[in-house]
Length: 200
Image (cartoon, rainbow, N blue to C red; front, side, top):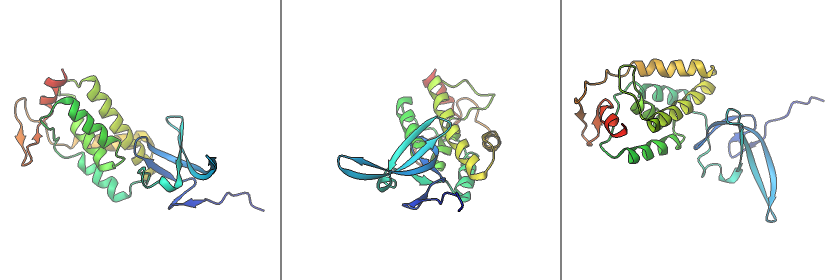
């Protein structure tokens, strides 16, 4: 008799599958288990995040409502990578407000939204230093993006990061200090100089 474990499927997810949990990024469903809570039997996805050495238990019935999703498809990855080559869009609002918006995008689990954060906070060598909080948000977004692209494209995280950095290098040259073009919705398509003065 073979000892190969058959994948168990619930809510369209199966054991062994890589998934994205919005606030933690890419994890793997290692098991589906039952627990009794207050006299009720509860079925749970056991999602393991190897890099963070963390395990989450998500009720199978709540998978959709907590935003658990399958990995991005090739089209979404392409769209996210294309987003990186666009011009940074920075709103003229307080840094604390922008930081909250960036964090919400990172924790949305939406690969394209995460790519927007990477694009908007990216700094080339020639640009002024980022503040500590900008750098942290940028690194969190890059990390999320790298992990998902690595699993989707079946490459190492280093190769996925090179792909991201290659796309960022294609983004439009940042405008000289003081130059900024305003978009129709009042955002600034600048080139991050107005962030520096607030963050400094």
